[in-house]
Length: 349
Ligand SMILES: [Zn+2]
Image (cartoon, rainbow, N blue to C red):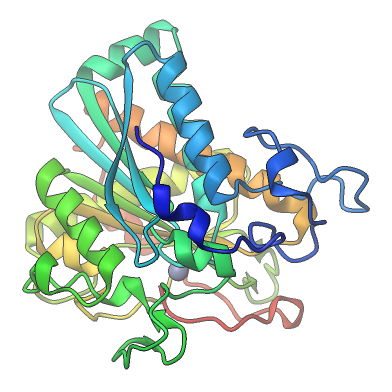
């Protein structure tokens, strides 16, 4: 894994990797592992990896794995930051996770790091067996430039994006159209994901995002911690829709067992959204949205998503998805109204 030499040209924002409410800490002083913000009133707010710390954490995992985890850059962001793809396992079932296409939706990346440790470094029988049954690829933090700025878009300030924001950049998750060639893709990082997908050919593709805060309507009233959705574009082949819903049912169960409160996500049909695009291309495709809960619940959010990643890999490896009734996905309840305390400039997917 080679470090990105252009990285140093971009001024680091000291607080860029921290969620609102967490205390800033000097980037160079932070260990790659999660630690609570030191001395903070918010004891359990997750300390997120900066881009440099993410690179170090992945390198550490790779080294500790004795060759079981490979980490390489599969492309660069507009500002030259590497997009890391970590792979493990030698099995025929191919599973791919993508995190943080939207730069200000960071928690899935933290879950992915834990997942690579669990499945790449674990020596238990289950995990050893699993590595013979599946090959897992994780594209960790697809939008490092957006992460650096704590915004949704990539960094393309001179662009006039059809989807995105002038002066900022493209919304990467609108540029996965199956008909668009990676070399013609104006959203650089989406093109990198398209290439990685085409090279890896996953049968399961899960895309981790974050949403605002929502609750089920009364009398239930519980806050929703996680929303999920399968592809909803009409061009998705029936077999891919079926397998996507089977994945949704399993992921719903994994989150729920971990204590999450799960709803469907009211996502759109546009084919440039990864959830739809990779379904159209034939994969079982799923969107996961972790709610932006207060800092003291970020570790919970990271943990539940980590469990969902590990569980889906195990279920895929053990052939437990095929027997699931896809219609059970339709019985996952719809998302309720936004909470006033959770106001957030919220876009679809
Ligand atoms: Zn998102």
